[in-house]
Image (cartoon, rainbow, N blue to C red; front, top):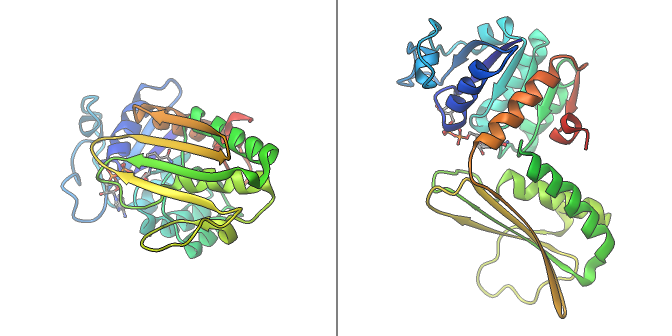
Length: 265
Ligand code: NAD
């Protein structure tokens, strides 16, 4: 299976390229970077730390979508629309890990999934996908005597907040309670906020150091508190999940899939 990596010089991109080269049955079709990147023209294998493979990094995303079976994209939100449209144009499966997409971009991804298989997840780790299921289940059991707060911490370079995973956990808890997250989300608190509104789902964001990704879903009632916690200590968990999603997506009909579909959860 020929896999192309968009954003191949990024933190995730380099690891995805290396893992593709190390995975039986997978071939690295190529990699792209943004126009002006120092990585353009460099050998993709060398960039990934796996030794030269004779494939140079380009900025030609269309050519990569045309030649690969599956594209993996972990870049920046502003590029997601264009990449989803290329997936639709060439019928190429797309594994989309970029977070922070606005509603219009998300709509474009949804539309592209009518013509291509797209696996989109805010978090490709097995642990977080289990946590999503547990959060939905616990929220459904407890009801709104239990205040739900979601706390996340990431490294100092992260550009979007709350994290895509924190929002996905909020969606899961809201689904368990049978409410719409947009109606109950309290994404920022500052100054004289007044007392907490019953039924709200609150978010708190921490940034610092090299934290790969910590998430807690807290259910706080009078007299007790339940905390569901996940801590990622290596990006390898996202990389392995994304490669698994890529191998799964190549044989799927057009549609928008989640990591829970890939894992059969
Ligand atoms: P990063 O900044 O290290 O890498 C992003 C790369 O994309 C950079 O090399 C940048 O030059 C490149 N890029 C930007 N525009 C491009 C374009 N038009 N074409 C090709 N390349 C382009 O960031 P990162 O830590 O690797 O994270 C990337 C994204 O993945 C973020 O949105 C992050 O939140 C998300 N992420 C998701 C998961 C998950 O499991 N879903 C896990 C980790 C990170």
